[in-house]
Structures are given as C-alpha cells and as structure tokens.
Length: 406
Image (cartoon, rainbow, N blue to C red; front, side):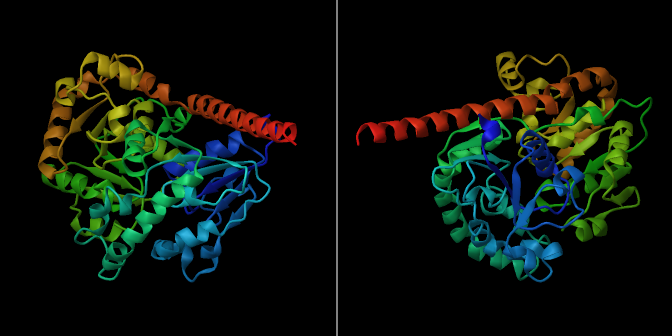
C-alpha cells in the first residue's frame, strides 16, 4: 500500500505562493507524512499547511542574500539539488520548474516528476528574460554563458525520472521536444471554492502574478495607457521597477495582496488580462470561477482552459474542442489575441468591450469547475498509486526470481 511508503517531496524553492506552490500544497495534503526538500525556504512566505511540514533546505540557504537574490545562484542549483540525501525513501515526488526533477533518487526508489515546464530561461523563453531592459549588464552574459551547461545537465538527469506528469498538453509537448520523453497530463488544482460571482463589476481590468519578463505585463500597461483604461496590477517581481516607469496615470500597482483580496478584485474586474505565454495558467481559471472573462494571448496552456469568443479565430473544429475540453464547451469564456503586440491586445480589448454582454458569469464559473482541486486530487492520487503498485510488484517479482535461481 502507498500509505506505507516513505515519501519525499522535492520542490525548487519556497519564497512565495504562486501557481507551483498551490500545486505543492495539494501534494502535501495528498501525502501528509511526506518530508519536504527545497533549495531555499523563506520562512513565512508560504501557507501554514506547507510551513508546518518538515522542511529540509540545501546549501543555497546559507549563501549571502539568498532570500532575495537566489536567482543569481542559478549556476549552483544543480549541485545543490544533487546534494540532497534521500536514502530510505521509497517514493520521490518532484515538483519542478527548475532543477527539482534532477534530484538523485536512492537505488530502488520510484521517482515521479510533476513538471510545470522545462526551465524557461534555458529553453523556449530565454529571450523573454535576456531581452533589452530585462536583465542587468552582468546577468545577461552570465545566463548566456551557462545555458549550454545547464541544458546538458537538464537532459542528462531525465534518466533519474521514472514517470513525467505535465501540467498541460502544452508542457507535455515541450517535454517530448526537449527530453524525448512522454508525459501524462494532469491539470493543476484550482481552489474554485475561494472564488465567487460578485453582485456587480467595477470599471477596471486586472493583471496579477509575479512581475516576470515572460508574462509580458508591459503589453497590458501600454495598451491601457493608450486606451486610457484603468488597470490594476497585483504582484511584485524583477520587472517591477521597469513596469512602473512605463505606467501612465490609469495604472495602479497594489503589490502582493492576501488571497481574499485577490479573489475580491477578480470578482469585480471587467476582465482579467493575461498577455504572457503560460504553461497552464491557474489565474485565468480563477477569473472564470469568479464569473469574469479572460483576455489572453492565444498560445500555451490558456488554449486548454479558455474558450475564445470567436472560435473561427481559434482555428479548431468541434471535434478538436471536445478533445481539448472533454466535451464541447457551451459558452465562450474569453477573447484571444494572437500576436504579442500592443496593437493586437488593443484590438482584443475592443472586441471584448463590444461583446461584453455575451459572457454569462454562471456559465463561466461552471466551466471553471471542471478544473477544480478535487479533480486534481483524484487523478494524481490514482496515477501515483497505480505507478507505485506496479513498481512494487516488479521489485517483488525480481526478488522472487533471484531467490528461485539460487
């Protein structure tokens, strides 16, 4: 039985509650006795459910300014994660968007990697990080210099993973392309019960999340600058200073806000603007759970969660919609734009404003419920249990064969 297995969960770092940490929280609930390993833990930065876990950190924890400047230690991350001793554990669950999947499992242990994405800054989205104005004059050449070594390591350590689980078909395609491995798709958990449909909406658009380069929040700012629309931005990150410089008088930065306040802001906004290419994107599902539409760049994981208003622009047939969403969606839940330009986003906002009465809040919420946390828990627990039992039976069979031949 899997309840008798000794389980270790390995997560990249604990510095705040973002999408990956929401998934980690669900994994901690599924495996309540598991120990947690992470490169770095900023105490108090994640929920109580995670904080009260037995947390073991790496050598990165002791380095100068690690809590705020840990990204500068990227070249050391492979060495740090390989330094964890997992002797005695039967099941390793890595929760990874960086190096956690490269942990060394002990001989005979089963390793299942829940992958949010192959490392963005060394694969598909490197230019989004090193582009003009996004990294300092020292950081940019450093990242370019170590990319080749990190890619080689990233490919080599895949032999340490027995089974990959991807958060979307989009990520599964990346895993196949970069690692030549297949992955089961299990969508991340969305806490739909935290969100509600408000009795009214206010006159603002919303952007939320880490202010990272690939999220292209600059597009939302420039579009709302030109349209003179109110834009509320929730979050902080390395792009914060640059984004504040380009913001006009209709742009409001709130920094990080408690979950309850974010839920309130989602329920009252005209729409969520989601201009980056995301691997899945929990936030758009949260917006739909609040009965609010999504204006999104029509690429990446969002194409698996948001049903665009003009399906002819989406360029899929009815059978393909059924394949993506399980059944053909009965409602549109947002508007897509297909070029990451200010002009394309402005056109999408204009289309939304001309069509706002076509979005039914109750139908949007019903669509979001198909991604509820309970569904993640059922699928993930079943997948892990099935793979663990198969691994255990193979081990027992091998032992029995060895004894029979003695």
